[in-house]
Length: 74
Image 1 (cartoon, helix red, strand yellow):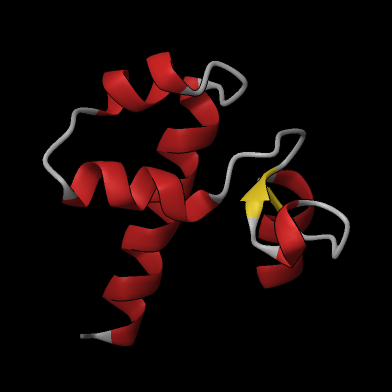
Image 2 (cartoon, helix red, strand yellow):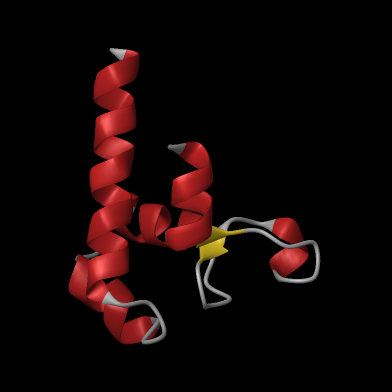
């Protein structure tokens, strides 16, 4: 599943954002949406500030993170 996530949802390249995980097809680090939500900002604000990220991408990422945390039983 990790490889699937990386190719369809997340990409990494040493030439883009110094190799940080970004939403595929953008230069927006995945960490940015986590930081927005952790800071109490709504998802819509993140999407307004980063229009290259589609709502579906952000929601899929959050769903995957939720599944990973559930599976890890943290």
